[in-house]
Length: 267
Image 1: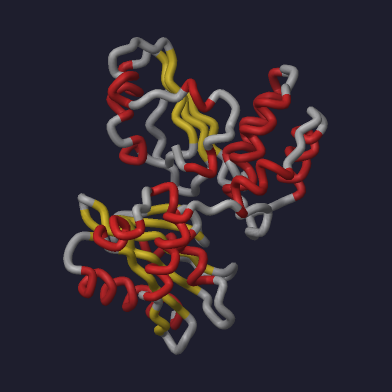
Image 2 (image 1 turned 90 degrees about the horizontal axis):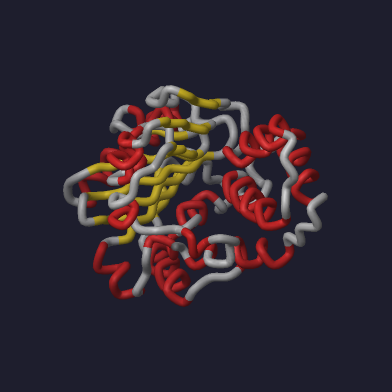
């Protein structure tokens, strides 16, 4: 569990895939994953359930469940769950409100992204009516950083490059970099956005080396579309936030992505 989410109610009920594989489930719900490979090894458990459901908000989502609720106009899956709660006329407690706040706020960049709508704040109104105090959750989600996260950010920013006449940036973290920083996946949350916060930059990408290759995250300002870029590499996501996987030496990966980003900016 990423350190910024350890405060969530019921976090102790989560279990590793290996433990879940020993159990039988009458129903399985896939949330916020637009294709089956996003579930990783949990997909086998999902398939064995008697009833399967999916709730998602990604454009181009692949329909893989008998029952699905998909709405690309929603800023976050948390909005769709609030809608379901309203339809079922169920009482909402403060613990559930905290979980849904985390879902909505993280998928909207703490309500800074252009996917935020009046619907988003209508959902937040319902959550706040439970007596939810967002000050501490917001601090844990967006302000607190582990020492490992700071070390990883320092290494990533030291690799930052400008290209496309300064309209784009890129960064990378190797396995050795992460080991030196003692950083886990949760320590890298939101790090890619640092490359987009620079004046004049319209697109950025970050390459994170894993045991299976390079995990690529792309971000863009409104008016640009990084989902179209990653589709050519077998990836997916939203217009302003998307990702894919690539293999090979970083220099090769970087050159491929730089060319694709520059082409998109000049289109």
